[in-house]
Length: 484
Ligand code: ADP
Image 1 (cartoon, helix red, strand yellow):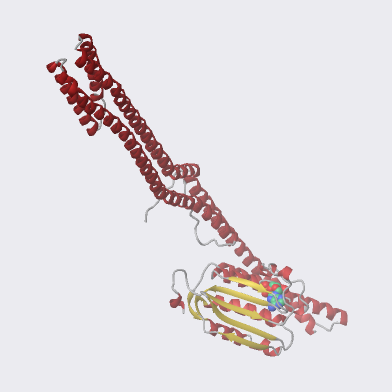
Image 2 (image 1 turned 30 degrees about the horizontal axis):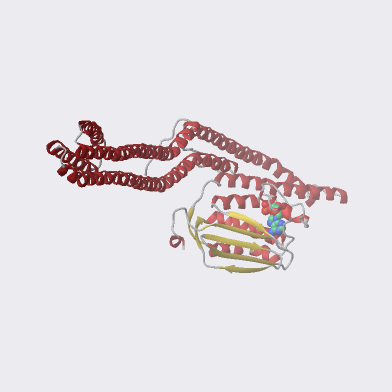
């Protein structure tokens, strides 16, 4: 593959791009101008010389007539003034034929001029050798008729040359037009190709910057950022990568901080809980009704607090491994069965019916993370389902994706909360049963794991909650059959 070396700045890339793209068009324009210039010069030259020849040929006709007149007068009258006039006319005639000889004539014209000169020479021999005798008068008309006829032919030949010149010009114009046409046919795709290539080269670094920023926003810090492009864009990429490293450090600090805090909180909390347990159980003495109520509130809240802290610990642990996939080929139907089995107790306790609609689907994925995803969705469904409600789980293939759907008959998720429920620590406002308070972390973990599999999660409408998860069944570059 040809590697393109980017220039130092984006501006140079633009300038180079525009210059290269416009080069074929400038070339076409230049070629056109040259072709028309040549055509114009040629036509001017051809017309000019043809017209001059025709003019000279035409002026030969009256000279022949004068020559004939003076020769015949001399033949009849024998007067030396007529002979003198004949000689003057002949000199004029010779000057004209010599002038014609010097011009750019066609082969035929040249031969005709030579014949005219020969015939004129023959006539001259007759005039000088015979002198003014009846014999000369008899022979002159025939000889001059021949000469005049040749003169006429020369004029016709001149016209023909002009016609041919015009025809040649026409052919030349057609040829030029054709060559311009073919040139354009060749150049337009070249220009389009060049425009396409440069658009790609110019937009690629920008697309990469956008993708990197989106990746950073979505918390994908694992892959180093590298922008391919002109020097300034490469430097921008390096700055973005520096930002990524900073974010990785901050993220690690945040996780460590969370772990420390939750760990540190656990010890005093355990003491608090044990104290409230002791108080409630009456081991340290009997309590009156009000004191018992306070002890109960203390006990309940310490349990709630413990759950929250465990959630925090769990979340930071999940976060720590969120960038890592331990993938292999997994039978997804088996994962669903295992998850349902693990949740048997609460399901039975609430008399919930489970409807499984699972196709045989395999996928290249992290089995444990997919298990956590399904488990969180199912435990929410169980939690929010009414007694003896129905929970439906579907698993099927859709093009290259594996798709899970989990539906329940609980209160559902109000449209206004559908985006928020995936945020960490977010808990719905409209949860009717106060006893089922959670930490608000389950769905944020689900989303994180699904995204790690390059998949997506959606909340669909319905009377109850309806979640749909899809993710590609194969790793990038693998064929459909390999994952099947
Ligand atoms: P929680 O521990 O509060 O369940 P989650 O992250 O699992 O935390 O869920 C966030 C919120 O999404 C919940 O507080 C609840 O409002 C809503 N939610 C999740 N699953 C369901 C469901 N199956 N039915 C109704 N609401 C749900």
